[in-house]
Image (cartoon, rainbow, N blue to C red; front, top):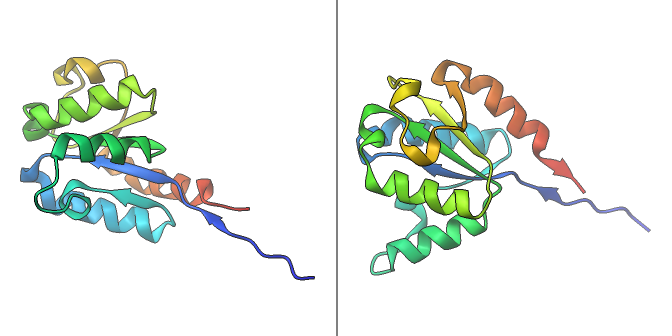
Length: 134
């Protein structure tokens, strides 16, 4: 009898402003290279779908909300909406600070863990460690 193993990927919902799309794509690629999976609206919501409902489904299927916090995303109603849903679902939320100040965090994110964008390599390493063979 042979032993089979499956890989459980750490599932990350990546919240961002459209103005930060390029950085978002870079983060997505690095998480996937580390063995995680990423939910991003532009890839995971089909045309014609209810955006708010699809976001809820995406968050329910995720292990964590990762927010790319920039001056643009601080102003984004969608980022605040996603953070509010994640908070209600009791999902861990990590903020990646990109040209943003801690004191500028929107209300649903004020008490959440924040890392500098320069600390992302450590975050990617942790994703790899969280991807387990079962």
